[in-house]
Image 1 (cartoon, rainbow, N blue to C red):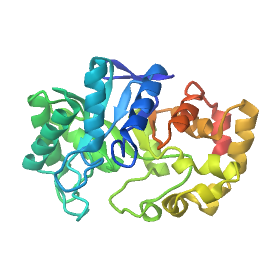
Image 2 (spheres, rainbow, N blue to C red):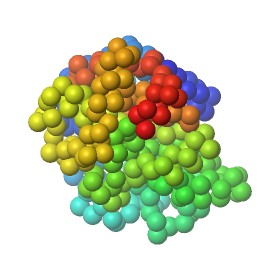
Image 3 (tube, rainbow, N blue to C red):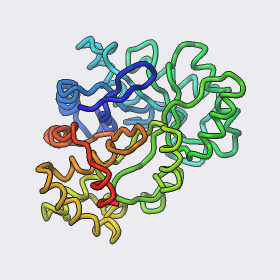
Length: 317
């Protein structure tokens, strides 16, 4: 497992995505994945207040499962736990919940469900373009002042908005955003193909900003829902309807033979190539491994030490 320096701690460069835990992923499967991940040297868990939330304002099954697991094994202080809040309720994705009342409600429920007093990283799960980035930084300062959160993050924010927020934070002695989380993988995707215009997917312009500022990025759907592994194995039909819509495009299919060739040359799986594409970037980049099956987590982590050369990256690009 490769590691990054972040806020004075060593952060594993592959995070474990805990979406759907206790919901479509059975608790027994979730616990097995968590054990395998930690045994492999992983220490970064990614969840959110909205994950597994059956009804607006209800409990998060993901946070609840993680909380019980950490309480039972006593590992909380050895882990970096990241969660997200202020996500719009699913009934109206364009109605922002970035305000003091909802922020404090979400963080309170999150801490209670995770059975912890403080979060290592807390993300605003969506941006609110009607608010100034300075207003949001000022609002987030409450979490730092109350010692509920150690580091702030922005999930599904553009680099332009992150820069506005951090410029204000620096000028006014506020805590800036320390990390971002967006959709990024070797496979190309857009908010349109994903089917959610509140999402932010990596673009070349944004990638250059992250590299210039050496800014950490956590990447969700880093393996494009298993696109390369399944197409190479002749199991394209096993891709979900959503995965086909989001990733089964001519530009991504053109990458398949390249991934297959490089995987064969290096003696690793296609999923290892997809993960290493991200962990080999110049800025700190952390793919979030997630799966509904235990054996897929094992396969993903099998290439956790792999680093691609600049020639390999150029070939894939």
